[in-house]
Length: 342
Ligand code: NDP
Image 1 (tube, helix red, strand yellow):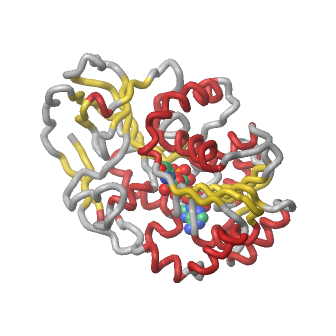
Image 2 (cartoon, helix red, strand yellow):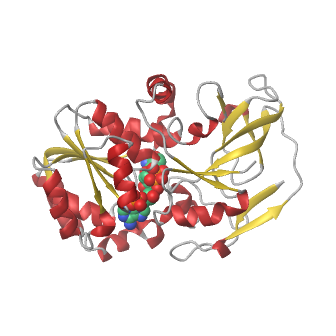
């Protein structure tokens, strides 16, 4: 089987030298495990954190270890009554052509319900993240204004579309004209600002102010950096900020210091939270899997009838996963980043 391992820990942005493609013998699944032939691998921003040897909510990938990742494929061998050969399973199979995992860590995917790639994006972990973060910590109310960056990615597009369906004014932030057009025309956002066209946080704030005449009630935080700086002063009293991610800083190493480099000093941040009575909630979606069935029941029909639009960016070949991942961190993906493995 083929697999991609972590060859070196990146210093800043990852490079191709940080990854290594290997061929290793295929192992046999143990008791209660399944062996899956991977068809599609999900690339997600959190994987950058796993490449650092830093204390976090999850352990790092060891040097020489298989790059972590969710994937979907066909069950080849099953030592569990819950899966039969030929079933489609999503599981933590990593960046590899084949994966073995306990059946209890896998989810059966119904290929008749939706394309199996959706189990990695709109109907998988990122879509669930948007749904949960918005409902639980955004507490959206009709008539309010919501801002979300990485607007055409699987998290941002879910947040924006759900908020729009609840009667909010929804403003996206995305990199480039093409993404901004998609945010409006495919995902139905009211407006979308191109962050790459606004060099400073002040410029970006001025553009945001025009499309948020009544301020911002919910800022769904995906990126940090310049966007956060632009948004903060526009937050309304009693606004909510679900902190989902901060991809602008993932390549910077020690997050505390880099935040200061970007001028976003703690006093500025704390003062805004204090004087505007903001609710700021960090969350990690893996702590909330108990609500996944509820999400799927609610959102799968919306995907099936087209009221939630789907955009995927599929790269061909496992060997191209490292470059696709490097691109993802720089905004090179347009839609949910997926690698077609077989
Ligand atoms: P996307 O597919 O949207 O990819 C990331 C996007 O981030 C890029 O395409 C780019 O979009 C944007 N981006 C990158 N760098 C910057 C920057 N410096 N400033 C502004 N935007 C930037 O990712 P996902 O939808 O999968 O994830 C979105 C966020 O949600 C990430 O921060 C991720 O870590 C987080 N997340 C958190 C989870 C949790 O449990 N808390 C679970 C899942 C995801 P563009 O070109 O449009 O700027």
